[in-house]
Image (cartoon, rainbow, N blue to C red; front, side, top):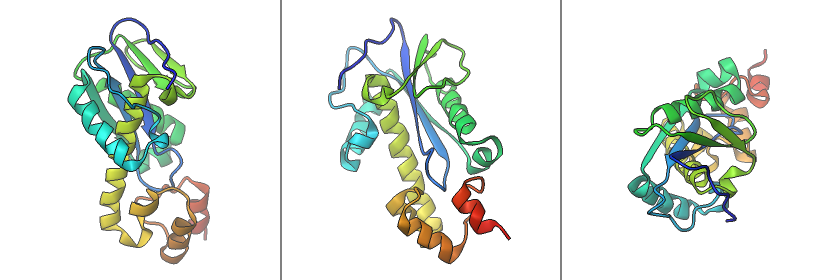
Length: 195
């Protein structure tokens, strides 16, 4: 991964998982890596196998100076929209860090309102190690949460598609209607609920 040189001082990388799914929360993570303990193999979570993500998530938790994960609920997504909910989850993750960062690097093109300077980097999860680490934590935590929702609502096969709009998910929605964890503001779900 061609890494960008982060600013000096304590820098946290921030990323989210779950903007596209039709169900479940959006999850964000913030990570301050330890420069003395680099983690080989960090990359955009979408470019890693599930097994590799899980292994890296364990290493990130063990070696990072600080990390935190937060979410915005389905109700919040429906109330304030997915972009604002993603920024809210990111802010919650940064606020939850045990060490306050001096600078935040955010994956994407928008920054949440933070207590420290923040910079948005498009494709940052493939360019900045701390953002890659955050993308891995956000994805693994969200996937684990979707597996828990699968146990409550097995008819939707959340363990297979993690709430993303797949053919399998659409079939389940048509057959069973929307569950309490479906995002009612998303067009495919809203269409099903229309009278």
